[in-house]
Length: 193
View 1 (spheres, rainbow, N blue to C red):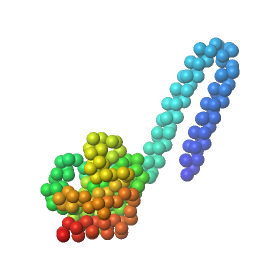
View 2: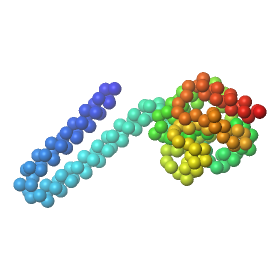
View 3: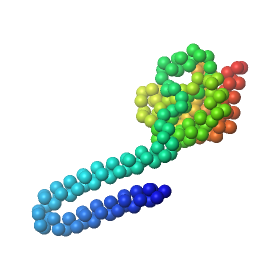
View 4: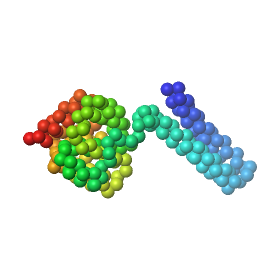
């Protein structure tokens, strides 16, 4: 929390400094060194300030992201590809597809609290588990989003062993392990009918 306060103070101070700097040089440099010289100095100062500010903000956001995910930045499940999906169909097991993104807080919560829960992991062995990284809108991501009518992240799709979606079990958002286990058991029951 202290680092957040310090970061916020430094960022606000930097913006105030830029505002004061431009105010001072706008009134003095035009008179002393000519408008072109003053503008070059202002442009150089603004460029340096932007680069330093961008670097600081980027480092701060990376740090916050790592704190939020406890350093976990990869999915617990194998990646979804056309080949991995075809292999899943050959296994003749129910399929769960986790559609998530790096920027998605609820996706990280699912990984940390639900997907890593011991009972979910144990029951997950009866499924083929895949994850689709939708951080970037690739052709594959667009195709899957259109095919399964994905409107938000995270979206967890439950499919029969034949690859048919079980729409009533689709999850959008975070869910506690106990409720997720109920979904998993319902998917297995549909599989065996």
